[in-house]
Image (cartoon, rainbow, N blue to C red; front, top):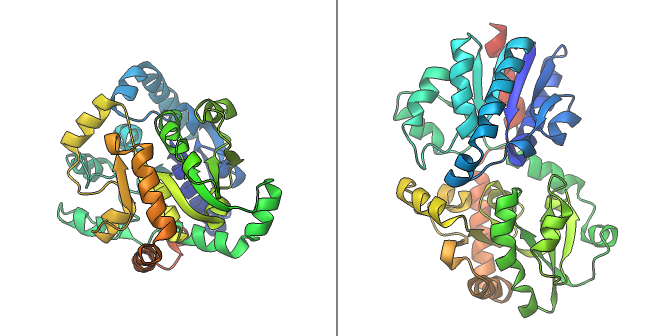
Length: 373
């Protein structure tokens, strides 16, 4: 069978790669192409465009790059027609993928969405688009199945794919000492900084995050970087402060850390599943933030708190996201043993809600069944 997969960011590349791995096990004659990154490519998916050319975040940023986005649509439509896949699999990235799904359905392609757009947070009108143009939706958050049922749309939930990724990483982790040695770090306890995977996130988050280093001389701060971002961008935003940078080792870094300062997104859930106490940060362009605040009707921004329906991890948003508040919360995590224990206990409960670690295989099986009919 022929599969066309569209992932527009690093987390999508990660989940798509594991899905592809299982598709290849189930369908030994699979031919897979798509938009994504190195992880998908490593599983024998031919990458037609890299996600780093697609990563525009925020309302204003999208408007500023509208010509490039329109051009991307023209390219991918031609590629889909020429490849003529048995199924098109969309991985999150809703602003692009939902628009593309209309074209795909109008041209009689089977459509599958894996990892639902967060329509439960805002833009619920998108459910109509999903029902009209998506043949099958696979969700990865436990409350999403009930959400869609309220709109008479049957979706399938087989747990969260991060569980299997985390379990595999824990099993293959060579240990903190080896991680420290391989990256020329000191013996000090580590505080991980996860500034995001997009240029705009790094520019908005890292300058404030790095300011707290001076207040914790007994710790070393290490940035989780991605090779898709130029090294100069990280250096420009740390003001020559002594901070180490490691590339493409986020899980090993977290497993070696005492705490983490994390940009809101999938990384907050990953950090929680690795049982690392964290502070969640988010700061965007002021206009984008004001628009989002009017549209998004949620009490929390981090997936950890949303899933648990409570304030498990501290969220510092927009103006609250400053070095003074980060310092205060980080001190609490490092020095208040009961506070740390409470966070870890809630993390344990979170893990139980997210499945047994077979998500990618089960979803791949269902997709194969769908296109084999």
